[in-house]
Length: 530
View 1 (tube, rainbow, N blue to C red):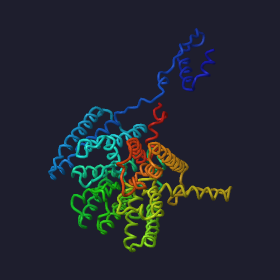
View 2: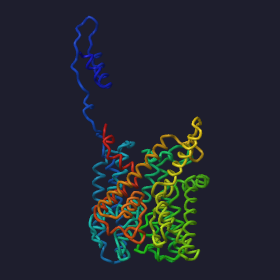
View 3: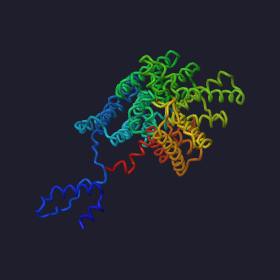
View 4: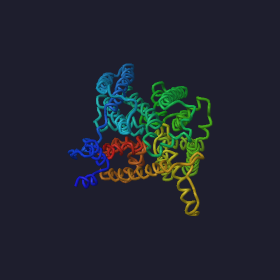
């Protein structure tokens, strides 16, 4: 009877029972007494009880830093003498105190490394906590925004989406304008670090390809990930300063130069007026294009460039593909505008170049309403936004390398159809791509497509029209900024949307910025199981 019971139990329980029997079994000749059957305590716990304190510790540190950073818009309002300085003093005190208390409460829990569950929760938790506290100045300040609008704006800022629910931005206090730019700037450098350090470790959406030594993304000559993140931050700051000085030299005011430099390098797209770049001189438009493109390239390549080697940047397949796509779209739209609209060649080229760079990098600046150019440019720019920039940059959306891997996989499948007995392997940068990477990329494409469809249907249930629902879902999940149509197009904003739609779009921004899987995984039962 006991033997039958052991056979029916799980392997680990059988081993436990067998070990107990051997330990209690007397020597030959003595009485054979069977011990009572006991079940290990850990089998009764179906869910993991991993330590959340490391997640709270890091989140607390970042919230404390966020509270301290509110001193900058506080000083801007003091200098402007607009009487709004108390808003950031109060918001900074609340944010800093909350972060400090959380840090102290969890300070004794940091270990040498984080578990996979802790990394997932940290990535998700930070990008949720920062917008929650970043929304406080909009609640307390001159906008007197409702919580849904304040949270939407803060989430759009930290995810560098660039969608806004505010109008007459030029009339905002200086502190709020600076705060919008700062949040986007923080979000830009933050997503680079997440893309280079966390996402490859989590094996999300094929990002593990940039962890493979054979692809030389980090390279043997470069230090470990923490030092790379530090160097990237310095480069990010240097490029922001260079962008601001360029804007200033071309006639933009000092304050506007500083804010627009932050929102350009972060590919965020928040401007200091409703007109965005439509009233800017041509020279500033060209300068913005240069820095938007710089921000859309892999920042680790700049680290290698400073280290003395330019070949990785020049030979990076996603960099070359990015420039090829931008060039093709700009030429096509320029010719369309020149022949159909009848504007000059220089204006056609400049407007096509600026808006293509803005949409494809996910910046979201607008120098004109491209919805008025006709159906062809609007459709082309919509799909250009879904391509996005390069991995490891501040740019958003699906990313160029995933399309390259998708095309490589399709080519291999076509070859296998023609030659069933042949051996064909997808390659990227001249090297074979593992099945693990391809599976992650395919899963990402499927999840992105399904997420856009489900979100578009949900937005339609709230009363939005088809174009607004579909483009709104795509622009939120891809973190592009403007959608299509008169409501949320390049000449509109998201202020007139209903509250349920704003909540769904805000969560979609977070989900898209963290490459979908990092958010979806947290809400699965398997994630919480032991």
